[in-house]
View 1: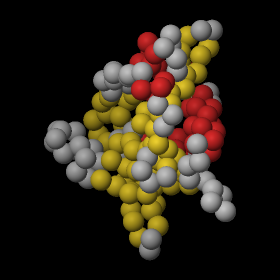
View 2 (view 1 turned 180 degrees about the vertical axis):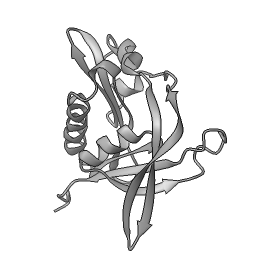
View 3 (view 1 turned 120 degrees about the horizontal axis):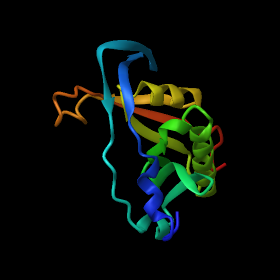
Amino acid sequence: MTHSTICDFNKSNEGFLVSGRIVPKYENDNWTYTEEVISNPYFKQYESEEIDSSYIEDTGKAVFFYYVDRMCIGHIRLRSNWNGYVLVEDIGVAKNWRQRGIGTLLLEKAVQWATETNHIGLMLETQDVNVAACRFYARNNFIIGGVDSMLYSKFPAVNEKAIYWYYKFSFHLDE
């Protein structure tokens, strides 16, 4: 992201249909999950977010865009986290461009940035009702590292749980 492209940040922020949820299970030090269909599907749209120039100027933060014919159709927002991982704060692909590998390309860019900045992997959080995103992370070698049933408790009608996904690099940077 540059000062001239900062206005493109929310252009790929489009909603999705919620038709199920991920049901994580922790047993014998291992996370697994099943999928559950919900009876009343609904549309979910995340609010547009403010982005500031710190993602351009701060070496511990980055935003990358994906363009087709000068149109921004994807983005990924990253920052260094205290635990040695890069936190994927946001990733989005415009609805008409999903299922074409663009999200995977954005994750590959995140892996490249994380490696260049000496991090041990990627981490992120998504809601249990974002089944497509959870499937996407699992396909891209992320594993569940934890679940938070309280993160969204301010919104009781939603009844969502936060699922934390991790992709740990197979090498150790201090060796």
